Length: 154
Image 1 (tube, helix red, strand yellow):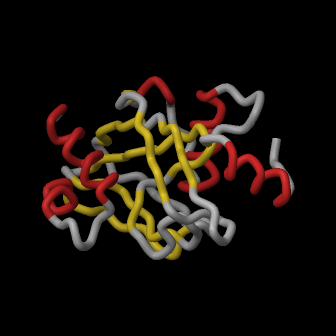
Image 2 (tube, rainbow, N blue to C red):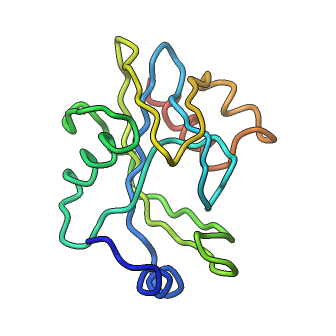
């Protein structure tokens, strides 16, 4: 269910959002998009989005992959990284912070997938995992934590 702006603002002001991030690794590089929207407008971040009410999380995973990447992914090919809190001072709305309870998933691909750019991102790029971990001025701390996690598992 997609909420109108008034209801959505009320939700963001009063509750955490449950979301999924999709982390695709190819050739020791992480697929990232440059965000057009808050939170983190202009930052490199993994594709992801919130789970809608009455939507199974696997269905949300498939929707997000299709909408943001143009990919039909197999959920079973991904590993859940646990449950992570993400806190941001900004949101879609002025003077409203955002709290996500995030369920990030990662998979290592043998072939480079063809990505179809969506309107939420100005561009995509493959960023070396080691660079993401070591470059705190260029990558958000949540991206550094994700990259560090993936490197520890591979």
